[in-house]
Image (cartoon, rainbow, N blue to C red; front, side, top):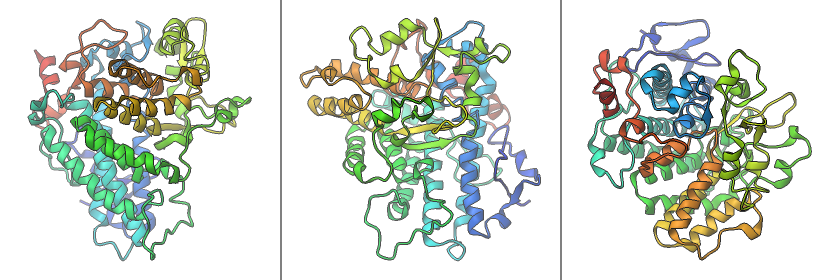
Length: 503
């Protein structure tokens, strides 16, 4: 049977990683691998197809950003009649099984497509220009690591610094081949090793050939870009997205020295990275709402451009949306909570862009506005996956843990300053380490609303309490259950969360 890969706007779907029935389907909009990969354009279509898969509502257009992950992290209030999200907010994962299954399935489907590219790109130097070969292969390897790390952070274990024994626990399969056969599950330690291997191999390629890399290029270097394929590198898995992912991995492992080294290298090179800079006041505070960049696009290290992103989120973030039962699904802040979050009583948030510009307000419900869209809006459909600010937050955390609190304050204030917070409200050099830890957490909560990052933050650090809930935060909250079909059909070993659900 010839392998099939989806391109354009057609999305692959599979029930489980162990059941690959989608390989048997060949609609008109699909192309057989042995035909697709005969040309440069075929490889380009294939890698673009992976980003389209990631833009599905089961992944970054909804559930891994504004929806499922943010709801788990108690980022919003949810109406008690709000259906799945109300149950998710209360950690009733057995009532949200379909959402979790789709996250697993869609992510592994994307990985399968990446593996198809990687298997077909070998020995294709006669088809691809060396720059195309290196960047496409580097992106595919890097994305494979990135997506497996996302799965590990959901279905595996965190707080590894304090619980190294969890490294030996079986979690997800790290899938490196494009086959229908079942790939065995790996331990957390094995998954992390494979992630490092893929990132290391990708880094060699992207450092030399990615136009966003600041490394000196070989004198024979050429970037064929007549079709603008390499324009807007922040919309693809570029060299600095790889470095940021590596920093995240080191933080997850509890290796702050190595994470700090990666962060400092990024900060030292940031001014040389084309189109990457702090948001300007005149951009976010433009008199016209159509000219306001609400996601701070110039700060995106890696983002997806998602067709009709706002339409897919309106039932969650637009209080004026009139679809049946839409208001019941709203994810919102009560005004008093928003004012506390942004420290209005202390005047910290008075000029903070994230407070003044990023809410759609009714009398009782304030909704995150950053994914706003309307006709002629200048910055639509942008979902950030890695922000520049995260690098500064990770750096501040690492420096604070090393006792270099003054240096940590400098990094945190750099972000605060570029959020419009008044200079007289910057954090003082003499702040205690404990107080700075609290301030770092506050910044994460303000910065990543709607982006799915707080769940990972809490899990990495082993928080035993979440804000806005009195429910206990146990392993069964942090470790999402592997889909039942993976266990019953694919013969997977249940993770502890699945086992807990069965008891």
